[in-house]
Every structure is written in structure tokens, then in C-alpha cells.
Image (tube, rainbow, N blue to C red; front, side):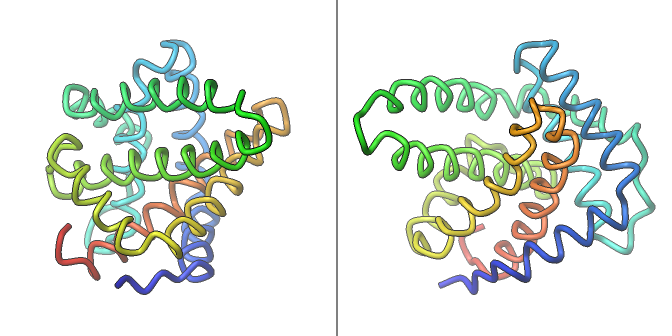
Length: 198
């Protein structure tokens, strides 16, 4: 069982963002703009680029990342295709499930929080360990299955923090999306250290 520390992961992720706000805000803005202009087709490489930046910031042995590191995400273009396709499927599924009376919103919150977090964690795994999403998704689902209660709570809370920016007509995502990625990056490092299957 993982030691899932909501407050610890969120606090460390938020501190990481505050201490490196410039590169994360500019990188996040560029990543969101490129993803939006390409209708989500480059979402995978942009998340990979942000993962490169965040993992560098989490490792004191590495030099401080720059905006150029965002574009290193294109090195993972082919490998991130399964996650990009998965996000499209997730969006379609969420749209359809939303029509289920009464339970649609609840089911959607679970599907979106678990699906988005799992996809992003697979990209962090790809950048950190060079293990493709296609090879690592079963491991991540096994980690979730074995720790579904606390991880579901964490995923939902992290998604709420990351999604608050949507309330500001999407403009707030420039700030909240990098915070969400910092929180998941911090959680990723902790989960890998604790889990034998990752």
C-alpha cells in the first residue's frame, strides 16, 4: 500500500510552482496555446515538455530548466500518441456519461480525475524512465487498484485545483494547469519510490 499524503504532495507541488513560477507560467502558457491551436493533437508532447521541466526542478543535481526544455517534449511525440488518443476517448466518454440522470456528474468526476491523472503519470514515467505509456499503463492501473480509495481522493482534489482556472473562462488555466502538473510530478516521484511495480 502507498502512503498517499494529500497535504504533503499538494504543499510540495504548490511550493515547487511558487519557487519557479516564471518558467512554469511561461511554459504552461506556451503548452496550452500550442495544444489549443492544434485541437489537442500536441497535448502529449506539451505535457512531456512540462514533465521535463518539472522533473528537472525536482532533482537538485540537474541544472535549472529553461523554456527550451518545453520543446524537448517533441522528442516523445510518437510515444505520447496513446495518451493523446486516450484523452480524446476520455473527453467523448465524459460527454456521453454526462447524459446519465443523477449519477452522470459523479461518474464523470471519477472518470476524468482517474483518466487524466493516469495519462499524465504515464507521461512523467516516459520522461523519467523512458518507459512508454503503452508499456506502463497496466502498472499505473495496478497501483490505482491497490490504493484506489486514497488515490481517487487525491486525483479528484488535484483535478479540482487544476480545474479552478476554467471558472475564469479558461484564462486561469495558465496558472492552475502548471500547479496541477507540479502536484502530480511530486506525487509521481513519491509513488515511484514506494511502488515495486513502477
